[in-house]
Length: 179
Image (cartoon, rainbow, N blue to C red):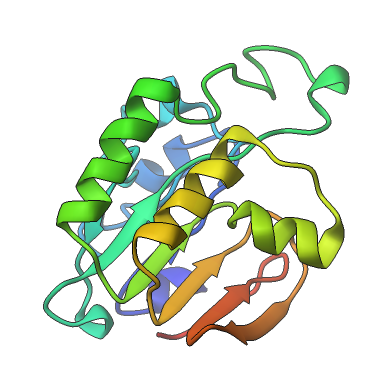
């Protein structure tokens, strides 16, 4: 299982039963989860495994500067979901949180970015997806500083391409990647 790995970071949409993390005694210092749009931010924050809205995470493979992470994405199918059950109004950072996130990124640039979604220019260019608040935020992060590697998973389709010196990797559903 993935819990046998030395360290893991799950890139969102963990699910709705977070108690499995505690029930299986999964070490929150080694196995962390970034919140996606199908995670309940209020409930997930009760577990130490979940990373915050944005910040730096350190793992042996990221080097001394660590990896920058930012949570969230837009649910294009929210009309068929139930608020508070499988759709959450705070699935994306709000405006004030996004400004704080960009300021943090400006001061703490890293060579690795981990996010649930990807920048708008990439989502639109590959899949023709419209802009969302999160994708626009990720565009701004890209404009401030281009990392060497950007890994995300929201689209569940394997993509591995380099743009302007940055390797973008979209992990397919249940796919893993060693950095």
